[in-house]
Length: 363
Image 1 (cartoon, rainbow, N blue to C red):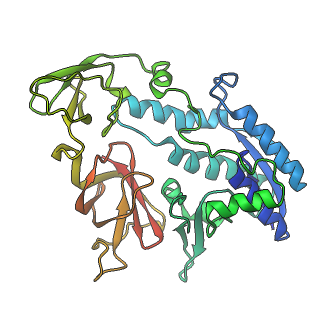
Image 2: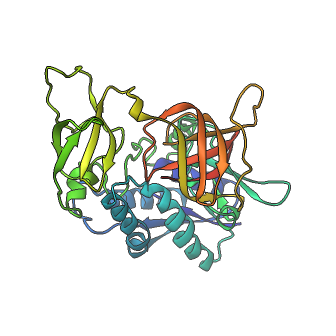
């Protein structure tokens, strides 16, 4: 087949291209340029990533094309990102980037080039079920599984997607890269949001969202500090609160437990296990289901129901047993145990075994 690989400059996409070429496919690499507001800053790695991607393509003997999706990214991802923060929520732009850029703008471009499939270095899987629908699967390496970030893909997108690293642990990927001489085999994994890089997060947000100071209060209404703007804080946050101690204080760390947008107050509590930080019911809006229809209401994982539902309200979290209750607004996940700081704007993702069913935005 003709397969177009999203070459990011990282080791995962490099090994993806190597494996596909070794299987005899006609492989073309595409480097996606999604951000150009501050290409020259010390925090933007685009130039270094492009050099690495070109080096990989040269080593593998495949062609590479650079495609600029910066306009699409700003319109479809970054505008939403800022609007959500301004509304006091905490979005996950990496999920939108996959849905709107890597498996939409990039996929469309690849199809125009005559591709049969596109491939990426995600740790996830895809298979066609007996009824013809496509399923998104967890990657075998639990520590790297990225199905959470892909849960909003639809049937058309999955039908054209390949994830050659689905069954491979990360250490094996690096070992292959080193063995075949891929130049970036030791490159550190990227972390954080792609357009922010390693820069201080609040410093970045302040460029776009002005400060709007207000009070930090306890659930009982006691003023314990001051905040710089509700957009700069997220539920469960511990660092950066700068709340001093007092005689009445328990001495435990402070955490963000909520926001009152109308009063411009940040609600904070002491102790990681404060009841205000635990929720058993997590309502979802803007739900998306990979099969095209909502799953049936059902029970959680248990010894008696091993095929029951599990969900995560943040990445790198084990699936927690839950019931799913659909509604006209989206649905609610009812967990067997209280989940720690489910954050409005983030995604709750539902699984049945190793199959990702989809999910929604935490309300």
